[in-house]
Amino acid sequence: MNKWESNFQLGETLTHEQLNFFDKHGMIVFRNFISPEKISTYLEEIKRLEATWLEEKREKVNGIPLKFGKDEAGNKTIQRLCFTSLFSAPLHQLLEDPRFVQLSALLEPYESRVAENEKDGLVVNNYLNTPQSSFTQMGWHTDSPRDIFLGQKIMPMLNVGIHLDNCPFENGGLRVLPGTHKQGVLKLLFGKKYFIDNNDDQNEIGFDINSGDLTVHDGRLWHRVKQSPKFGEESRRRVMYVPIVTGKYKPKTEASKTPFYHFFTSKIHH
Ligand SMILES: O=C(O)CCC(=O)C(=O)O
Ligand SMILES: [Fe+2]
Image (cartoon, rainbow, N blue to C red; front, top):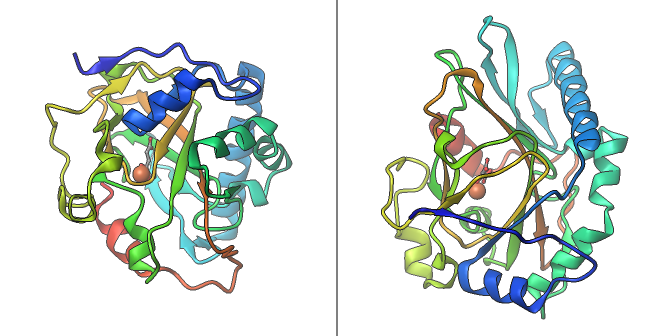
């Protein structure tokens, strides 16, 4: 069966079972990481940021392009926001939750940090399956080669997903190929066609994800977002991602240049 169960909770420290599970599979789901009240607050903040940025006609944050689409009523909407915690006190406070520090255990012996103003910061993905949407799925990829595009060595990293909508397995959503974080660099680079390949894989697995759940995956793990078989509001899937990174500190500012890979991915994230 391609649907896996998880009853893990993130406590004061990660348990041996959790560390072993992550080491073996390259990903882990923690249930009920944030409360429904907090989720409402974050959704409000995201709506506020979206309205502000549309009003300002903002196109990028710290050099990273926002991704625009239209909702069912034909109104302009932002389907991928970045660096959101730099513009919202509640989102900034979320990243200060001490439980994020616990996740550093998954990268040991490397020292790591929550990348609030590096890479794309705290990203919000807003998937919607409608004719005018420009973000319904995301093809197979790993998160690591973005470093290579930037001319850097691949450094260990985690991508942490904070899920804001329920997404049962049957509705698509996050799919991963467990164990692929341990493959060689050739498989990492050429295992599948980056972002273009949206095909099912017999080895892919997924979970019933509930709003409030946390997912953590290794940057080298192959994963994708499968399109929802539903349409309109029923297909909406909002999830925030923040990387936990190692290596040299590389903060971004409004003067930062748009990285090359964004010219590529913006064409194919449909
Ligand atoms: O939306 C998701 O669950 C995954 C997003 C993702 O893989 C990415 O932004 O790199
Ligand atoms: Fe990814």
